[in-house]
Length: 335
Image (cartoon, rainbow, N blue to C red; front, top):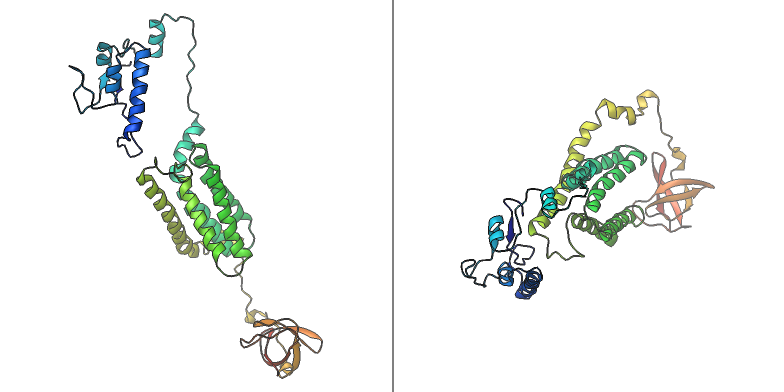
């Protein structure tokens, strides 16, 4: 043993640090006894390292488990000698021909160990912020898509390499995102798909930060669950605040003006919008498509954009023009 080392205190505990049920302690006591007997140690001392009820004269009192220092372990036959290094162990065992290879954690792997603590905040405050901001203020999906993929990769990779993010949690995250996309781009309105997508995305992001085993949180401290939940909520709230508070200022910067179209087409500059001739007022035609309340109508073999006052008009029904708004006719059903 090295100077200042200890041996003992092998009571089985649960995830919160409390003593595990006696069936676990009983198994551990038997393992300790059999190991001690195999190596020529006192099995009572080994059992006393687990069971606080064991009493050994001059060594252990009831209510405490045995923990030896290096000198105490030598005195009681639980340590052969005190050594300073691996080289001392080899010398003591008269091993002369050997090579010692020292493993050192690569710098990149050290970074992975620290990334999970802050990467979610970067993802929420930077990746999501820029992605939503540029999606709102610019056409196209180039920058938002690249930002979203980069942020997602920086979020998932460290947790996966550190063994926290399991494959099923990552799959759940992507399913949640797909459900949200389906709700936005495919399914009209907001319903089950949207709620399920948001719920699945939030839950999977929290689970990725926790060392759970298929929803088994027995060995996950409550503090970690609370911290992960607050990180998730804080990321969403913080990203939203940055989006709405910082977005207005960003659109006024010179850098933003270079990539955004901010010019307006004023009437005073000669720009005009075509409008319909007043002769169309009172004209009768038919609905070229269903009007609910907007659609297309046909008048004198010409198709026009039109809308009603809120009434639904079936395709083929007769209509009458009662007004115009810009390039759109306002119609009503006839008959």
